[in-house]
Amino acid sequence: MADSMFTSFDHRTPPIGPDGTPFQYYEALRDVAVAGNPIGWSEHHNGFWVVAGYPECHEIMQNHDTFSSAAVTFPAYQTGEKNTLMLAGMDEPVHKKYRSLVIQPFSPRQATDTEEELARSTNELIDGFIANGATDIAKSICYEIPGRITALSLGLPQGDGDRYRQWTDAMAHLFTTDPEGAAAIVGEMHEYFSDAIDEKRRNPGNDIISMVIASELDGERLTHEELMGFCIVLLLGGIENSVKMLSTALWRLAWDVELRRRMIDKPEMLNSAVDEFLRYYTPAGVGRVVLEDTEVAGVKMRKDDIAFLMLPCANRDPRQFPYPDVLIPDRTPNRHLSLGTGIHRCIGTHLLRVEGRVVLTEFLRRIPEYELDRTQQSVWATGQVTGMVEVPIVFPAGAR
Image (cartoon, rainbow, N blue to C red; front, top):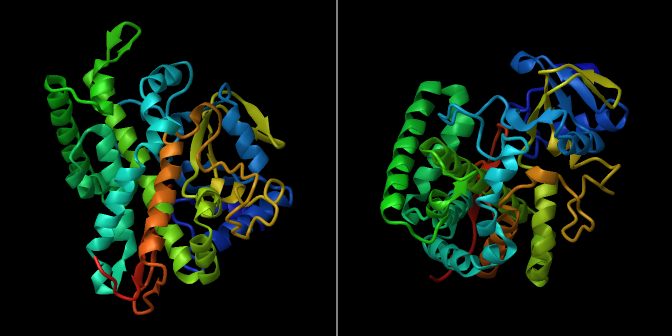
């Protein structure tokens, strides 16, 4: 049973269960891991190791000497870059040098400074559909907010948010089913960012792209390719996880009336609830390349093997999380791995938490009573980053 689960495992196409998510399948794989088989070999994608236990995932994420981040997206996203994915796919000491250039804009204080804009944008979007009594909340809010905030950070037009989402979707999803179509969309993205970089060189502003253009690394300005790499990874990082987290949280709150009313009665609980949503519905796993022959949990791995860390399983490991299959909004401690750990902890961690808290707070304030539209299906997107992407809801029509 254990061998067959691992052999047939493909993180990009997991079976969807009766609740509309793949977590019944992930829980079964987690049970295999906890029973003494935390790592197994999959025959998909030319073969790779599936790491499903929390201690094993944590150990690999901390061991940068033996496990490289070069395969962080696996199979590799079609970003149109010749080199490794900026920041996320880099190892030390190069990673630290590049990360230092953009760490300041993602500080806790900077994240808090976006609260007013987040609340304003969320309410503007709600005004666009609240009189209708129905909407696809994934498309009307969850796709929009991350694009707007990412655009604001990069100094790009917020009105182009839908284009940014199409680009991330092409890089992360479409390339597996329509490589030529994805390549065309990614080419459009490269042209857009090239023009934006040229414009920022001429007219710098108070934004990340302008800041990176003006920065020096080892006494030299960054090349055009390096600047492009920053644009792409900040776009991916700012949109993919946020969209899935927000959509899935609002989907859960649509049918879990008790949980929703707890959130409304105690809005301060949303701070911890965002982290619990990230643990319970972990959006992504990450890949690593084995740099030298090694052994983890009694499993011998060879140089150049790929190890894929199944964080959705690890974050349900009872050895780390009591009652792992229960969503506990005020869970503490909550040392989930959804945002990474160590040197590769997500640079946008603080912003993502603020984003989740503000959007959920404003939505529940304006539309406290809502439910899933039973005439339509909610849709879970599979891939390396997964989550709800269609969440049709109905609610009592309100006022703008």
